[in-house]
Length: 455
Image 1 (cartoon, rainbow, N blue to C red):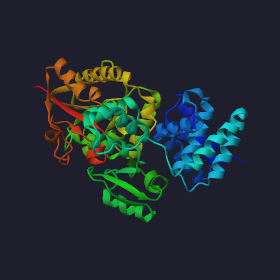
Image 2 (image 1 turned 90 degrees about the vertical axis):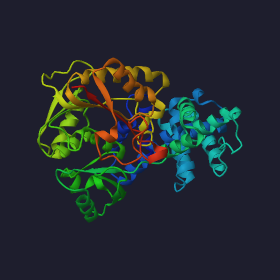
Image 3 (image 1 turned 60 degrees about the vertical axis):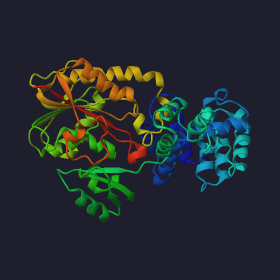
């Protein structure tokens, strides 16, 4: 009988491969049918690990099968990927159990004719586990003429799209690109943000300790805690809205609104609400914070997050920031946390690296510029406008900021470290933008630009 965890992992991978859902959505759907926490954890680990190491897995599968991945049925590819991942990266799992479940799974999904092939490939991988045939790391004497060998190592051994590896190699250099990719391939810890409307960070740490959840303070975010051990999302502290799960780099963006924030603030792309509730907490219940999003599902999620936080000064409006916003009275500060490629969050969302294409970046940047221009119309004279993304790529970051200033001469740039004193040294680049980077800060790659409307 095939283990429930492996069945769930297969369902997750087929859904992601079909392009119908992203990895977090597929994982959430599969976990609802698993009663045992151990099955849930294993299914999630297998599915996430396959996305994280997909290029390295495909390289070995093609090598030991003597067939290109493109010539194999999609169902067989997913079975081989998840099984090879367990054999190569989860060595505590018995190899015989992995191979037997893979063969049974091939039959179960109507690929009985491929069961012998699956068995042979996986047994070859098993016998070569201690000698992984992957492109080696270039030596210190590697020259520029070895660029293809360098890209082989970055894109296959470190499992990133070749187009992205080429970009990072060109922009950052080899060592920084390698460190960034190694960061992406390390599973992300659960990061929490204490809700100051209900509890302090130290108070939350003590409360979690009582629930056998061990945490330590984040490096840069003033309300952040990283979970070392335990199940933080299951206790009463989560149900009471004492904290939210939010990446540390994401927690830095609301600081750009000001410390303290002004009395009228608009969060124009607010769902799921992490930044909204952080701003509301900094406002201490005073003033007005309007939070908008466009899709019904996103607005519902935003509404639930705000309700859980206990914030009383937030008003939610369904609106599309790509169109003129329905506000007659301008705001002292407007935040545009724009939907973007997400290429800065590959550690947290490893499937993004395979879902995104380089030719998508111009269209994404154009949409982000439109959102920023529309939002700018709601900024009062002398007010502040903030543009943020979780992208690593300059087309979506400084290029959008520059294009905005060229089109809107009524706005001027402001250095992020002058917009707030709450940012640590080293988080602001030479141009004055907030920029976090894996190889520098051990954080996901977030970007923030600040502008002010001339009085």
